[in-house]
Image (cartoon, rainbow, N blue to C red; front, side, top):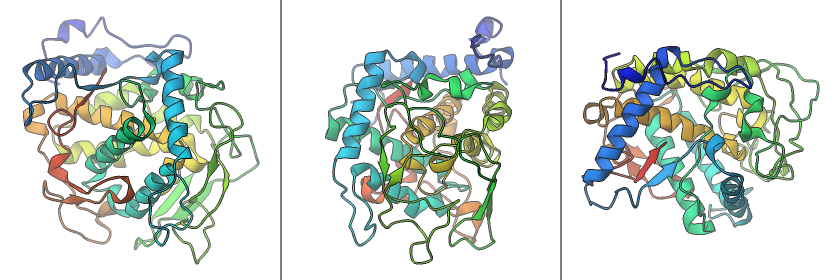
Amino acid sequence: MKPSTFSIFAGLVSITTAANGARNDPEGVWAEAQLSYEKFAEEFLANATTSNGSCNKRTVRTRQRWDDLSTAERLEYIRAVKCLFSLPSTTDPLAAPGAKSRVDDFVYSHINQTNFIHGSGIFLPWHRQFMWNYESALYDECGFKGTGLPYWDWFLHTDDQAGSPVFDSGPAGFGGNGLYIPHEASNDTLVDVPGPIWVDRAAGTGGGCVVDGAFADLTLNLGPVVPADTPADDPYGLKSNPRCLKRDFLQPQSSAHLTYQQAADLLETTTYDEFRAAIDQEEMHPASHKFLGADGYDWYSSPNDPVFFLLHSQVDRIWSIWQGQDYHTRKNQVGGTVTFRNIPPSAAATLETVLYMLSTGPDVLFGETVSPFEHYCYRYV
């Protein structure tokens, strides 16, 4: 990595969590990159160089790690999320007859677009817009008073991910693992993708309902899709299927892939195509879902688990920090096609590629998502 003005901190800033034995940031590489990104964000916002001049230090949303929020801030976020679960769906019932809540609108949209927004060139921009729409719904529809969408900083808890405060069992946490029920490894294929494309995962340590935390009594409506025994007349799980939220923690996925070393490796990539393939197809993003298991691992309906949005806020944070290392070069880079692993073969993604957001908000172009500062107004700390 090219030395920066922050290289002096490389030996000093090593993020560790002694309580759970998380691995050190190798040589401070990730900490250095984060400092570089934060310095750039400060300068950008101070100069107010956005296209409309409206994004500045006063107006920017600030996304923080869940670990750093106070109990009151965590409770406020959970309140707003529960509010979205209480609001009625806006999805056409002919498209998703089982959709009942506003959150189901996000689940339906993700289900509908899954075969295009994973393993493709639009994985990162589509999910960035998806997160923005969700965050905006928290503010606009539920009066959220927080500073921004929090993120799950899994690097701090690599070797004991269940020990992250994200999974606290009290009212200010998302609850932990599901109850243990005997089960086997999962092995299924994506829906309507030629191949077949196998989705496999070892059995975890839970598998049953989440019975603690703020979402212990949560009722899900759509899905599951994959892996699941979805009825032939409902392959995308869009009919009503009320059930509990389930998790099935698989710690080896965290120990192997949600690490500072993996983050440092990502920073070695220099093009968008290299970066998005590395984070989406070389384990880090898949591993975060595999750790959660059950509803959080479902390729299609994973937004059912409220942790999904903290997970993808972290993915977007990593992309933002990578962009921040060479912002003006990297913000407009594209790569890949618009189908999962180019199956079936599809057009190359461009800045003019339309991202279909369905029930979450208006469609946008790829090029409208590339800058958290110029097209949105948020940063990570």
